[in-house]
Image (cartoon, rainbow, N blue to C red; front, side, top):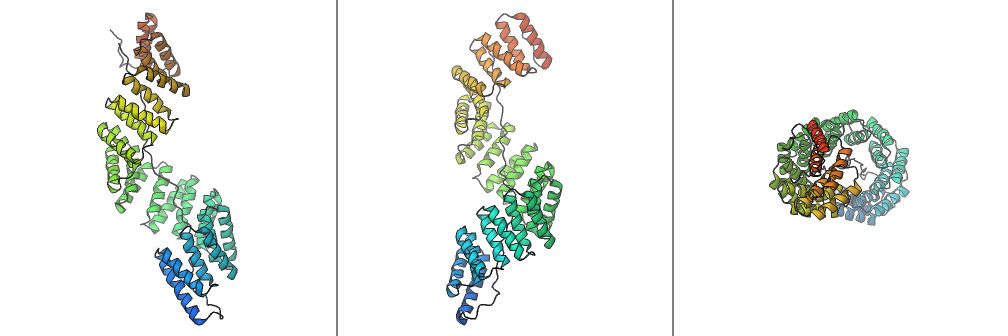
Length: 459
């Protein structure tokens, strides 16, 4: 009798692409309203005002480079024009030129030290540079000048939250909302901070409020569904994502997330359909390919699953979990040599993916390379000495090599680690028969059948 009851465990590798909640830290834009000093020539004053205001229109339209050019022209006519300096700083910050932006903001504050708007924008530039403590200090300076700026409280809250000071961030957001109760960005940010504190009921209520005020805000709806997931309200999260894809049917990521949630809910047909829709909108999503492949694998549609794994691996060849799951799928279609190739690639990509080391032994065993399989099993056991399945698989291999005493020892270790392991008791009984230990074999057969009545005593 040859024993072939090797076990390979699947990794549930359907992963979500969720980042942190989307927070909003806002710039305070300066409109040119202040009169220019009398010593500036009248023509220069008029031209500078016009250039600044035209630059502001371009900035608000997203034409940042053109806005920068006009602000610089305004400052060439009037170097001490604080509003143009602030607006130039905002545009430079939007381009990622933090140091230049800060220099312009500080020059504007030299001219007008009581300008709370510019002081707040110093905080924004420092926030973008991830200098959170300095950003918080700048916002506090702005609010010391003028305490009725809800945008400054909101943006300071974002900096506090990024610095890991969630309780202080919550206080800042609440102050912003005390000034402007329907301030959607502050509502969203407060909800995200409460979500991080596991205060999910209030977080979800606030997201619902924000959505009612701004129904078309995809980022807020996404934050809301994530809070529902964190709270364990998965059915509501699925319903929320159904509404998202109804409103934004061309959003590939939303279809991906819906597919993931449906997969976890066991709704495989709908999961497959959602993931296929996501990939039809954006084919270059390796995670969507891997999630779709996993769902197809669960549906026993192995050739289709293999095709999806291969498509995803063409985009991300080093994904160890996908390589492992593809190897598992090849085992299901009785292609152990291809499985061996995938498991080896998975181990090369992630040496501590111990499941792949165990699965490699199974694949090598099924492909007939028993010596290499034994090495793989023993390497795995050296890392995971408490895994009964590893000893069970090693015992199967040793039995097939005719090493019955060593096989019996390995089966005994498997049942020591898992006393209810019916198949290990059964195979141990068969091995003991080969060793002519009939009384011990009978005892093991009896235990195996007690644990699993579907097992039958051999004739």
